Length: 402
Ligand code: ADP
Image 1 (cartoon, protein in one colour):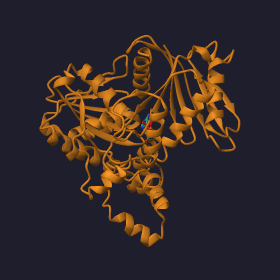
Image 2 (tube, rainbow, N blue to C red):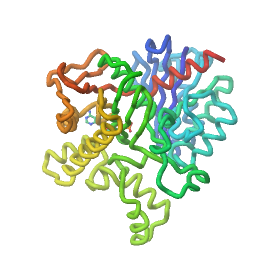
Image 3 (cartoon, rainbow, N blue to C red):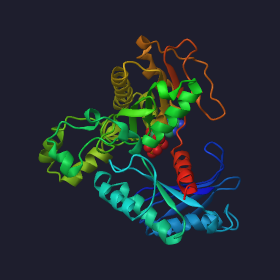
């Protein structure tokens, strides 16, 4: 089944075209990104498998135009990989917020769209863009079934004591204020992959997954189900991230708003886009820049790297306690997949649990590494995440049953 997987951001569209033969057997036909939608210099970067990258630079006023550019590239006689739009059998979308409406992927209909609209309040940067993507596809490919996969769905198994904030209860009943988590698709995918790699039965396991990227979250997974995760009502809660502050004393928010005379929107911008690695270092939100700066002696960059390590250790430690132990710790995403030294430093704090790393561990053909030594009491793995594959699988299953 040929499936177009779409991840719409406010000014971007990331896509992958996959030919799914089964859950684990598939061909990647093309991938790419449309960037700077709504800005004067829009761009499509299209990477068809086995062919050269194709770049189109032109103003892209909205998501409909962006989506049309993607589809035109997919059927282009030179750069394309399909004969016609009719070859696309289904479209799967990544949706950041599904609140407590959705505990799994689902086919798009009017009711689903209404619920995603309600969730815009909890993910104002993401959900409106996802809706633009759904509408753009309905416009260009009106007869193709669309499926949505939610970042929050995997965390719907959390118990009320884990997802409730100790705020007046009416904020939950009136405004749905509770913890929803995020990156669920990634946590679910890497936990299953790593369990298979480590020879652990997922149905009888305690796993901690660390998704460390631009946004970072850590999840406690008991017997395959999320029981706690570091992100909350929005993806701001938890650990230090590229531009997000993670946990802070909530009283800081009104204090700074008064001191700096900031509106709620301006304060939201500070917390989400001007904090984290960027805010603390004053230089960059990118791990690669910070590693370089730290090696050149920049003290604030060093503090950022230490805080990233510290926050990760703190969350893992908390989840070990919650699950009364751990069988497997998994690292993934941009930082988790590319910084072996950092992972070693994090794991050094868990010597007391019997964590021992194998200094010579090698990646398998899928790029996964079982990092723990044979005599380690806890397995440790690095698994590249693949949210698009999960979306394509779910889409395939749901559309096959129509
Ligand atoms: P996003 O949340 O945008 O998907 P990613 O998972 O791509 O983010 O993670 C981005 C982070 O990963 C950045 O801080 C980046 O510096 C870091 N990163 C990506 N590749 C590497 C690499 N090869 N070496 C070190 N850090 C990397």
